[in-house]
Image (cartoon, rainbow, N blue to C red):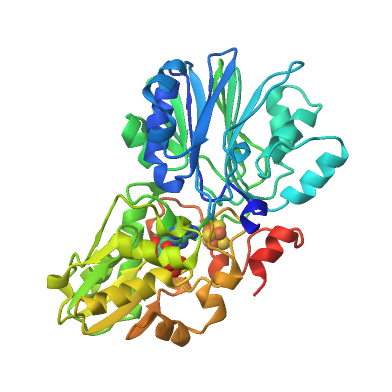
Length: 474
Ligand code: AMP
Ligand code: SF4
């Protein structure tokens, strides 16, 4: 039930092309590069300058788009989306992009990464005025707001509508002859602009630029939109920049190491987190190992700082679905076993420091500590590259409900016992902030959202509706 009512656009990726004759094909490669942000469903809407065409489905990018479907998509502009949704809360009506057809005005396509905290308030208001929603996703709200705007031209309709939204968003908004990319005033979700030939690319992560041969121009700023049409490219501010609060979990876990998020390379930032983690939580040991893939950079930083050698102590089987999306606890545990194998020759008879990026439910850490002991490790010291996650996220990252968060229910010492480690330590809040700020290539005072560690949410939460209540009850 929870999956049905909670935001169904958790942890997604968006990608757009404007002004290039191979827009659909480039979007395919771009979405493929963003696949780590969502493996459940994908889709794209394409424009040939007059008509919008849509193709979407459940599955990976390579599964949904076959050679023939891609060949049939033709256009010079397109927006695409990959979706990551937990515990089967899908439903094909929630696959993005959304396409709103109209016989009296223009067709409109939307793709969204993030989660709106005032979606239910706006939905109730819009339904009262007669809007009918096709999906349970909060994304659709923007489409109805734009449709109801009496402003002219299109850009003013979009600006007026964006101002009404609260929460996290990187939105792609396209009609036949215009494309807009917008980022929320707190900058909670990333959105970067690049150039490809005479055209432009918008993407959640810069790793997609390298894949399609584009060059980075700049990040869209919090509260800013970029707008492209036949006259070229324009930038507009639709809201004043609020306290900059980029999601810390993008750096910790979510983004790909070869991406730069708001100017900070993710690999370098994670390495620095590992460095500070070693400074703050040193322990005598023989080897440092990381949990593949997201913790490797942090483990390397830890090893470098501590002088303890980094070793490949765990091997990942790449052909198993992410453990997090398995619905039951029993299946999740089975998933971890299928996914990771310890290298006995590395860990046998050794005191091991096992670095992981985060603990959510505690399943992964408990299983890995067990695997390492089974493989002969004499001590297992767990080091985590972020502070304990004690609060749910309302901004589109599935860090689970408070009920399921192990650190919300138990003290650090209790968690240590539950996962069976000899010691357990976390990176401090200050060190995480310092690691990111030292890497961010900006003179601006860029802040982070740290709400899942601190409970201090950067936006108002607009009361507790059913979705939020489910997340915080314990
Ligand atoms: P858990 O086993 O529930 O403690 O999950 C922790 C593991 O899941 C860590 O090793 C992370 O790499 C990964 N992880 C952290 N946050 C998320 C998230 N929001 N979605 C999916 N996986 C995550
Ligand atoms: Fe990211 Fe946590 Fe903030 Fe959610 S609450 S946006 S996961 S830092």
